[in-house]
Image (cartoon, rainbow, N blue to C red; front, side):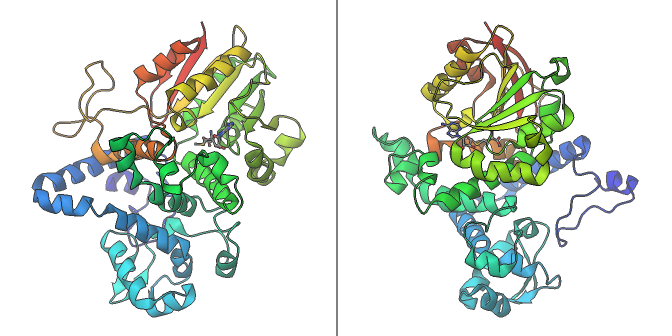
Length: 433
Ligand SMILES: C[S@@+](CC[C@H](N)C(=O)[O-])C[C@H]1O[C@@H](n2cnc3c(N)ncnc32)[C@H](O)[C@@H]1O
């Protein structure tokens, strides 16, 4: 890593400095090397550590969620943004209006795990990790305006979503799996005593700001994946001028933005629930590319994918990270609506993660990493996917699926599997049978 950086005339970024995207941010070799180091370091820790110590580290994982949730909610990274040498916890506590002694304990818990730096006793500064939680508005606005608080701050929005409705629901995973309660869609429904899906719950009075936060989190979730996954996952150039591409459950349309920027000869329709396309959706495009909307190149359309698909015979229907939100029977309903609207040459593209086993897959797959590393590189690759998988269970009884499970879903709904472009987010291409 050091030599790759020095070839660029840059030093490897320091953990003590706030994050800024370096010259090798999207470099595939650097990313692969980083993953190997992370997987090896984590496996080494598990190997050498006393097992009880490992368990004592894992079991209280909820304190990490609670601590991250607190500092994000009360805007600590924002307060530290303009104090590169750090601030005494008394000064931080005064600005964020909480008890200083308790805040110091949370800050030390996090600094011990490399989120913030304890520069000297009780003096804390942002580091590379905590700095990604800085929000996009002045502190006074953050304190008073819950609705706009997370807008434009994807890292904070992801943490907010996970450590608020996610953390509240997670303990109910135990009851949900052990007792299989018949009338609960997911652990979330047990926790909040509601029959509403998370999406409907976001529309209830008092929760709208959480829905908005989720939309911001999704934009950030999307930025995690290089745009080449979408632009190279399918041969968009082969489509005729003016062909229609539908982004189903597209949220604000961040994938469409990546594809439309590279392939302006196509017409795009981003569909999502009215709340999403009308507000954050319009804002997203007004900020990035208002001419795409005014020229008609991109249309935002309120549509539920449980209703018949209004755009018939599109060249492509695609979905990113939609099917993982839903259990099998619901995915089948969504895919059948698309199949009913499809024409003979329509394609379906599913951008979703493929669940990798922690052991070699007897059915094949990419070459395994060097022994004795786990086949899914442990926390370096499998860590994120298995966490999102449990998150999908937590909120929706959804799941991350293996390639075989996607092919089966397609076959059950009239979509024939054609090809897969693997990667951090796979692009699975289907055609009509
Ligand atoms: C996990 S997000 C993915 C968003 C987007 N595809 C992306 O990758 O940025 C799932 C999306 O499904 C949308 N959604 C939920 N229920 C829906 C429905 N019945 N019809 C259309 N969209 C829906 C949500 O509003 C949310 O934007």
